[in-house]
Image 1 (cartoon, rainbow, N blue to C red):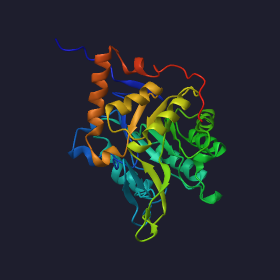
Image 2: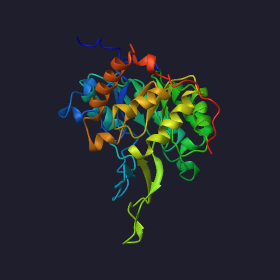
Image 3: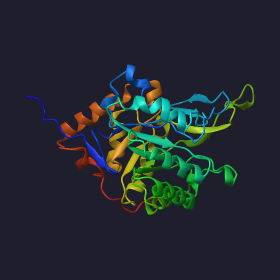
Image 4: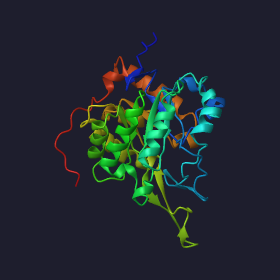
Amino acid sequence: MSRQRVALDVEFAGMRLKNPVITSSGTCGYGTEFQRIYDVSLLGAIVTKAISLRPRLGNAPPRLIERPAAMLSSCGLQNVGVQTFLEDKVPLLRNLGTEVIVNIAGESAEEFRELGRILSVCPEVSALELNLSCPNVKSGGMSFGVDPKAVYDITGSVKEVTSKPVISKLTPNVADIVEVAKAAEAAGADAVSLINGLLGMAIDVKARRPYMANIIGGLTGPAIHPVAVRMVWQVANEVGIPVIGMGGISSAEDALEFLLAGATAVQIGTANLFSPLTPVRVIDGIQGYLEEEGFSSVGELRGSLGPPPDYDLL
């Protein structure tokens, strides 16, 4: 006798996804590149690579290096800019068969607001994800995401110009990620996604110089997974808005950890680059786990780790 199928659909931020698996920004292009590998409509959603107000060439190479169980990258948000995105890329999104979340990247709060305004009238766009790890050029290049006030201001500013759900993507490079998440929630964010890459550096010992032209990059991949799970667990227990968990997912078990920690959905990033079928396998694995463990839906699983007891980070 076959097992009864369980409900994988999830609802958050005004969207209903067919399952909780999303591909993360910068790892699946503009959403169309993977169509020749698998049916993208199987996904709960895709997040486009970051879109800026003007085209960006990105950082000079070398800008990517493999590390044990991780990748260090500094691509510099290379993209075609919002106008070319609307003209050349958006028409292709209509045939994806899944929700499309656009990641937006600004060099100032004003640019974030303008991007939100421009994209708010685009029916192919389901939601906006704010790349708060962008450098604030008016503050010496410091990431917006390390400053709760900047997170509040940018999130609130974009919410003022769009009716689309706004997801604030949080950087882990902070002392207290809960404080930053609460700032996003207070400003009206419909959800938060975390974590973006940890800051890292790699040195060529023979040449005695940094491997990457930009010196410092974002560390992603399986090595950061435990850090990401911890941060998602902390945030999910302190905010009242949905949390999207990401960081080092390469298997269904990795994704299930985030769901148990309180995430409503998950994003798969670096694994798309070394094993493009990972999202499909994760969807199947979550389905199998729910059936075997007797859950009728993903919602029953979410947060079943229970409330956090007192704990000591030392």
